[in-house]
Image (cartoon, rainbow, N blue to C red; front, side, top):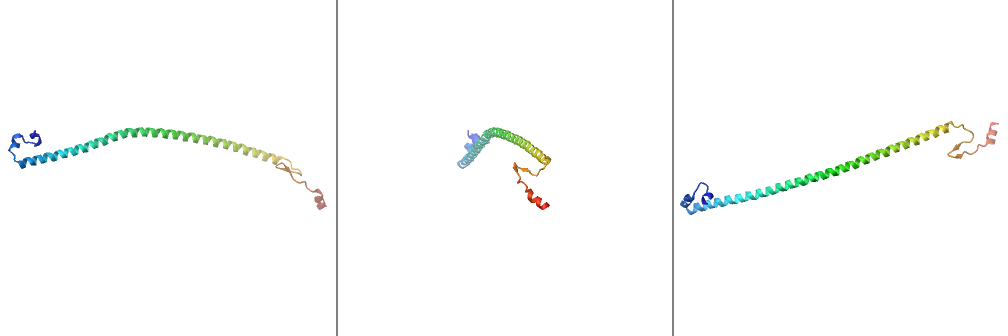
Length: 139
């Protein structure tokens, strides 16, 4: 057992050493033991961190899939909104074309109507012309 504590030394060699040398070997062994414990502690923390990283990677992958699902749903909603807006715009354009066509037709009808002394504007007749005044001026 003591041969393992002092590398390269066996029990006989250790028995031949004095107290100071044995204390020095013991101090070196204690220091090495503390260093190994500290390294063991550091490696344990590193292992725990890596395990947590692996666990979180799984959680992140699941979160990414969930976010992907949200983005897919949002894209579908946006596509539907754009399609509805396009249909509304098409309907509005068709209605505007019908209104313009009707207005052009009414304008042509008004232009082609023979004019008389009395014209109607928006369903109201114009005041009659006073013929006596005009007749006096012509005389």
